[in-house]
Length: 346
Ligand SMILES: *Cc1c(COP(=O)(O)O)cnc(C)c1O
Image (cartoon, rainbow, N blue to C red):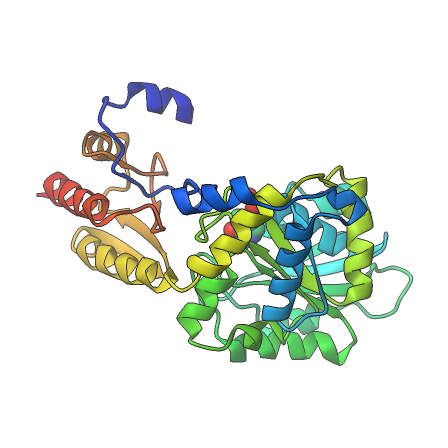
């Protein structure tokens, strides 16, 4: 049964709370208003002032020279990897990181780049020893190790700065470049309680999604050194990602940065609260805005149907469900989720 069949079978109850992902947020009225009013130009000509502003502002906030607006986090990570590495070169990353698991091996398919994934530690970090062992010596048998990529947050976990630093130090010792898949960069910053530049300072390039917890409909931004971002712009064009009056989308991103970063702590606190409720009914791991919940006996279609009847959408047909708190979960929606779970497990 696919997800659409599930939707069709679900009772006709208004959706109060969609906990499948923080990508399900809809642009609110204020965001739509700035999109409608956005000043635009042809971005392939470099003339979209709103896109230019978004790129410049995010680069500045993260202490980097330049930024590039891309259609998605996958495109942003791909363009970053293509800009850092040549054919026959290699990336060390995490097994379970998005770049390895969920990006269709784009860097290998399109760039002739090898990936050597390492096991991810309990806290979402890569172990320095594992990175050290994965770095290839200069030998014609091997690919040329060029780049380390980390992820923060990973499965909601904000990886401590010291753990990121330790991994990066191993890479820097042999002149590797380092990239951060910071799809939920600001969730990490909020949870770590550090300055926005503290995490970015460790990396050459950082990719940030505007369409996750920040509530924009589309877009990611890659920030880094000017020369690399210039190369990235060419790769983006080659991949068909050169867009024209994209200012209508960039305006949503700018609005998200102004209004939706400072509220991310609310999502974390709500996830803590829901996690506490659920811990009575099974195994719970909660970090930032995410909960991984395995009820005794596992998630079943019966649980999903029951919650759907309470207006609550859950992902994961069996086993563990990932619950994600976000901007469009209202107090009413959270209450519906809590009472729905309590009724089911009573
Ligand atoms: C969502 C996500 C991405 C990018 O996904 P898109 O759907 O292509 O925007 C990259 N990395 C992580 C960790 C993510 O969660």
